[in-house]
Each structure stands twice: as C-alpha cells, then as structure tokens.
Length: 235
Length: 311
Figure 1 (tube, chains in turn cyan, yellow):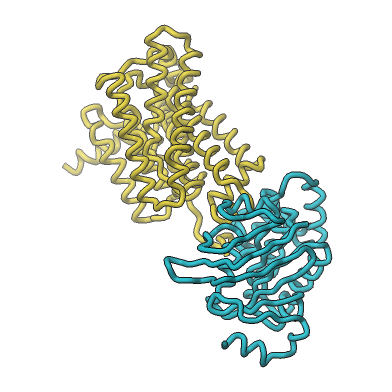
Figure 2 (tube, one colour):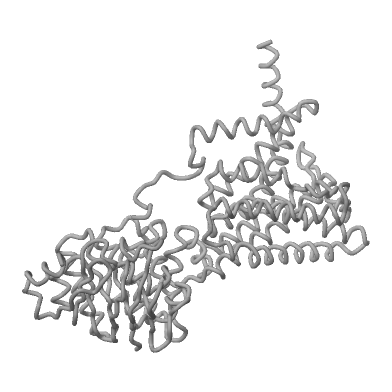
C-alpha cells in the first residue's frame, strides 16, 4: 500500500487562490479528516489530487511518484479512488453496471471477481438491487453504491467528498461505520466532511481548512472540544 | 382549389401506402439510421457534432469509384473504401478531436466545418467538379419481384446490412466493458474519467465505429447514386443531422430512431410526390421538423426526466 503526500500545494481559479500552501499526508490504514466552512477549498484539494484542476505550485506524490500532469483516469488507475460530492452515479445505468464501471480504475493485477464479491458482502444492497436503475435507489443506498463503486477499483487511498451530505442521521452512522471497516482493511482515507465533530472523533487526525489554508490539526481527543473547533472555523 | 389540394393529398397518401413505397422508404431509413448512429455515437461520447461525417462517406465513395475506374474487383474497392474512411477517421480523432477536447461546442463544430470543407476541396482538386462514377455494384439495382412489388436488391441489402450493423453495435454497447465505458462517457464523461475510464480509448473507438458505419453507408449509397462528386452525401448528412436532433441528440437510440424516421418519411414523400414537385421535398421535410421541434424540443423519442436522471 502506498502513501499519498501533498506538499505546499496551491490551486487558483482564474487568478483567485482557492488552496494555499496546503500540506498533508495519508498513509495506509489511517483516516485523515479535512473539515472547514463552505468555500474553504476542501473539494478543490480533492480535485487537485485527482488531476481535475492543475496545481499552481507544490507537488502531490503517491507512493513516491509525482501525480503532476497526469490525467484523471491515470490517477484513478494508479490506486486512488474518489467518491465524489453528490455521489455522481450514472442514474440510468443499473446498480450492477455502476459497480462494474468502478473496475475501470483497477490497477493491473488482482482478481476483479473476488474484489466484486468482497464489496458485495460489505454492501448487500448492490446484490439485492443489482438490476435496478441507480437513480431509483434511496440517498443512503446511492451513497453505499458510490463507495462500493470506488472500492471495486481496489484502491490504496480512498478520497470521500462529503459522503454524509443529505443523508438521514441513521444512514450517516452507517456510512461512518463503513469507513471504520474500510480503514481496518488497510486503506488510507482522506475524508472531506461538514460534520466536524463526527469526523474529528473518527479520523486519526483532522485538518481544519479555512480560506484555502490549513489552520489547525485536531486529534480524536479534541472531538469534545467544540469551542476549539468553532474558533478554528471562525478564525 | 381546396378540392384540388385534398385530391393531391389523397393521391400522395395512396401512393405512400403502396408496399413498394414502404420498402423503399424503409431502405432509405435504414441507411439514414446507420448515419445517425455514426453521428450520435460521436456526439454522445465527445459532445461533438461531426459535420464532416458526410465527407467521410464521400471519401469512401470516391475510393469505390477509383477502384471501379481501375477495373479492380468489387472486394478490393470495398476494402479500399473501408481503409480510406477508417484512416481519415483516425487522423481526424488524433489531429483535431483529441487536441480540442474540452473546448466549447462551438469551437468543435467550427473545426468539423473546416475539416468538411478541406476534404471537399481535396476531392475537388483530385477528381474535379464532375467527380467519378462507381459502377462496380450497380447490378444490385436490379429488381426482384416480391408479391406485387418490384424491390431493388440494394434495398433488401441495405435493410439487412443496417439490421446486422445495429445489432452488432447493440451487442458491443450492452455486453462489453468497452460498451459500458462508452455509455458512461456519453452520460457523464468527467465522472467516467474519474473512475478510470480511458477518454482517448473510448472516444477513439467511437470515432472508428462511426467511421466503419460511414464506410458501410458509402458502399450502399454508391449502388443507388453511382455518380460521386465532392458534395456527395452532403445533403443526406444535413437531413440526418436534423433527424438526429428530432429524435433526441443526447441518446443513441432516440438519435438512431430519428435518423430512421427522417429517412423513412423522406423516402415515402420522395416516392409519393409527382416528379415535377419533388423539389419541394426538403420544404415538406423541414416543415415537419419545425413542427416536431416546436412540440417536443428535447426530441421525439426521449423520455421525460424522471427518477432515473442523475441525482
């Protein structure tokens, strides 16, 4: 398993800085949280890792190799999978077709059938509703499918962009429990979330991002310290 | 006056329901459906309206005419046609489409206009304004009698060929990983790429499959219209483009149905209209198109946006 490392990355949209000198790393088997207010640059950081937006400065390496200038599909095939914000499922394709699309991101080697089986065990809904159109699933089921689709690519690092967005509290709990299970299987997770307290409690460390800059790093021990978190958000 | 118009319409309708007119219309619809698939496939995957599609057919037709003029066997002419069209498709993809990926739809459309006129000009310089004649397959114009109808062999060949091509394409799209990737790219290319779908491979295959279909159309059209000029298939392409829009440009099956429908209606009206009024055929056709687009601007065969739309 390889580690992901961001060193002082900067991203700008039309000259307006969105991410400034952000450095962080994700090692196998750990969850790193990234929280902050809207527009802080959290999703942009994930897009920069996936090669969707170019870096203005800094570098991103994965397993020691630079990801600079690589197309999104090459980054996906190198072992980094993204669960995008809003899930971005192919609504008119079936659940099974959505799942099989995840296989496109597999690095060479391994047994796709075995990985599909493992993911089906982890998320029974993908077997239960395999012939149903993905758009007909509930929000929670869609989120499970989106995570399952990313996992069949057999990634070393999983990036999640607000997986709890729009979900009922019970389903949010299920998603966070699933992340814990995934971590135990040795994957590194970079989790972008709005649910700050829940994220800080789950992640090995959580970075607070505001106006494109890392302001603070919190550990699970800080989860109860709401004043510190609010101060970090408002700083 | 009203009586005269009513009598004219009755006569046109009477001619249109004759079996021979129906089969001819289905034959033309089949060829247009193949063109529509070629145009729709590239648009679906790349969001690019390939206006130069007709010039691919023209180039294939010139290849057949060239082989025919040199006395080459039929199979050699067909092989040359496929080679020329596929080579041009590949060159188009590598030299123009890939570098322009991500540009606006207007830039891409203008680029295909430029390719279209470039290929026409090359054909004009090479073969002259009068073009060449492809005679190697004209024997397929001979009729066979089925019941009360005299049907040209090429009509049957066109229908069967289109059915086989569309069937194979359906298998490719529904049963293979590549087909799944192409469908995903057609729905949401950026997300497909984030999942690892190879954009170059998918768009390259779409352009080459469209090229294969253009070559098939070139072979079929040269039987029916053996005189190949630099503007060959240009009007057909415009009609098919309109058919694709009428059917629903963003989805392959509606686009194909749109292509078939406009070919079918065009064939029926062409058969039914008296020869001194056939120049009004495009007016009738485009009048109908305007009517359809006013009623269903998203396309005649597209579904409403329901729960299956992306959430």
